[in-house]
Amino acid sequence: MPAIEVENGVVDEAHPEIFDPRAMPPQPKEKKPGQQPEHVIKEYFEKGYLVLPNFFTKEEMEPCRKTTEELVDNLAKKLFEAGKIKNAYENLDLFHRLTKLEEEFPGANVILHKVPNMPMGYRKLWANERLLNLMEQLIGPDIAGNPVWNLRTKTPQNEATTVPWHQDCGYLDNNSYKMLVPTAWVPMLDANEGNGCLQMAEGGHRSGRVALHRCCWGGTWYVELEPEEMKTKLGINLDQDIKTVPVPYGGLVLFNNLIPHRSLPNMSDNVRWSLDLRWQRSSDPDGLWGLKKPVVMRVKDKPDFEIDWTEFDSVDRHSQQKKSVEGDLETNEDPEFDTTLPGPWMKKWEIVHMNKHTDRHKRDEAMIA
Ligand SMILES: O=C(O)CCC(=O)C(=O)O
Ligand SMILES: [Fe+2]
Image (cartoon, rainbow, N blue to C red; front, top):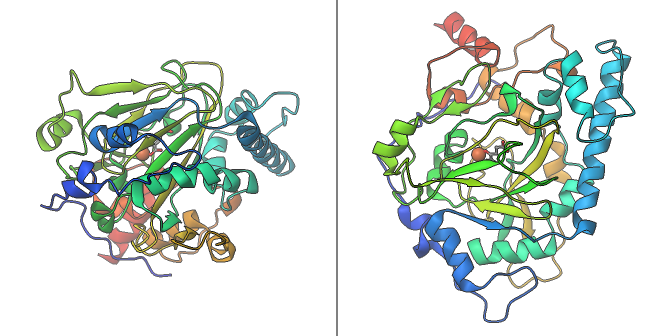
């Protein structure tokens, strides 16, 4: 694949009606399991986010933890067999093992964050019946899973997993400025201020605008939205609107793709595991430069519809993202242990700071020029 053209992220457009209470679909008269009272759904559109502290049962969440344990175990074995680490730390639990792997092989958490295929344990949660019923209340009955989902491997005091202020549109293509992409952020333990839960800029979606982001933050692949820009461009009151959003195990945070948010540093001894899962209307584009199609999850008036994962499974988003900025460059690096995470968002914003994630495509551009 040759490197793709990427439109500049700065546009003089505002689409508040796609994200604010005007976007709320007609609400069902009879509630299905998982569906919330109308005033709660309204809060999502008014504030831009919503916390549901008790949503999943233990039976629904445990497979997620189990899946994560397996992913860590696979990674440990792979690193050990390749001679990259001296100890696979088999005796440590889910909340401590990755920290040790990360100590011995910095970037282990990034490799895990880029897991190419969505394991069954996560898939079940993403397509959970009650969660999709809830999605119907946000985007209506034709629902697809948006290809951007993430496992957050937030080891203690780690730069690469501490996400600075951003609007999710900052990482998506410009079509995403005109489509509602709800996210459910689901922690695998109680998430709080101490272990790096989220902060939201309440109401930061109400202008309908995407503000200026810059790339890349510190030694990471993240874009950054400066607080001053949040204030002037998005009308956020920095003293009043910033909310810290703890959420217990079994709960979730719902938000939209325009609200500025960040995650706090993890000052605890535990790995703060979470999943972020996204949906969209099936009729909307992927929001990801055409790199990976959404997976249809629900079709109006077809209660027996079954999800076909074949196409979704066949595309590794992270390798597509990398190729889309770097092209098919030959490298000597072993893709299995590649700890960089380049993607098209790096071409959408001004690069004010280069690091290992940006280096190669910038170098390539210099070569072309
Ligand atoms: O989990 C985090 O640290 C960041 C989450 C985030 O930005 C998102 O889910 O969009
Ligand atoms: Fe985000």
